[in-house]
Image (tube, rainbow, N blue to C red; front, side):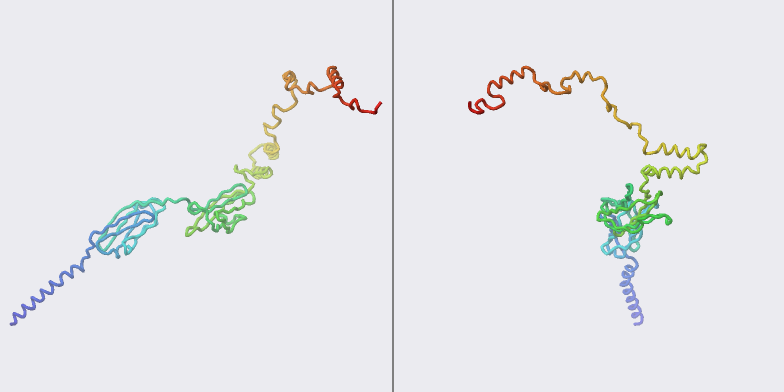
Length: 319
């Protein structure tokens, strides 16, 4: 009887172990089946992770293949419930390595991401035309109304239009050229959407021309004196050199081509061609002048016909 009980207990233990064995194996290993990852790009860059089971706990790691390249989307991401990860569009074409991890399984792929083709540029453009400085702010090639902060790069320099200015609906504003005789490097900054824009430009005084020389004669002489007054290398006295400079650059100097044209002036003595040309001969017409004898005879004939001047023959008192 006792041996029977031991046998029954042993059989029961074997049955319990047999029933629990599959449960232990399932807890130890998680079969995710075939794990795969893919990358597609249209408006956005989409990473898709596929597995036979849920990908809710999957992660995606993104890195550039070229270690010297940069990509704002590099890093590790948690996969969404639909098995996707959205990455940013790169500013420049870049090749990335994408690794998906789910449990103990991994899947890898590489993809070349292309920069977006924008319709236009976004930034600040500065142009100077004489006394006017034009500032234009654009977003995707279109002018945008915003505030522009203007300041000098050198904090010791001065610029009359430093401060904050608003552009018009076309994204433009007009500032003045610097005062004085020296150029000023100016910084411009603006915010368009979530993007901060910055640029610098060297502005020239209004009197300075494109060749770097002052635009009026007095300023030109002043510049010469400032640059040459302390020049001791020349044997010629400074006053003589200054006088020569003034004579050479005096705006009153007549150019070589000045003077009347060659055909101007009194006519030459050789006027035979004109005299011989009856059509160009000057003077009264041929029929002008006192009448000749034939004309007088014609007038007498007119009087005899009764069509001449004066009262008619039957006019006057009766005889």
